[in-house]
Image (cartoon, rainbow, N blue to C red; front, side, top):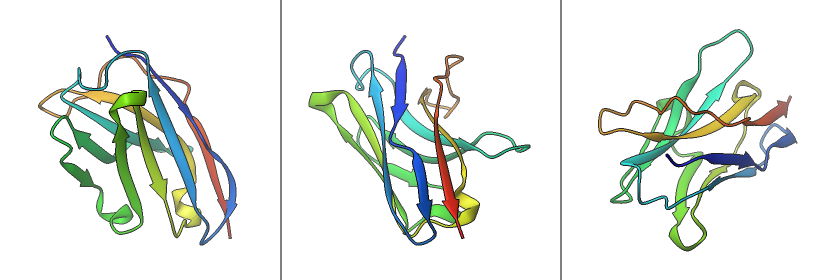
Length: 118
């Protein structure tokens, strides 16, 4: 089972940008897809972006046009470029492997905190 380590979070002002990294312990070709999730305090963990083995991408409506998910197969790393950040993007961000039914694995990393100030 592929394990992931997230990094790149931080404090940024509204309108700013961050790039998150998701480093995998094995080949990122192994899972059907890899997704970025986020969880704000008191809320459920939601899928915001995914990239399939075919490189097809999908985004949650609130981040479309602002976030871009990409992969570097040579580095076994998946990225989430986040632009035009809003205070409501504040959350802990996680990545995980996804099955064909877009179900995440049971193994979650520590995540990386993103805080957007107004």
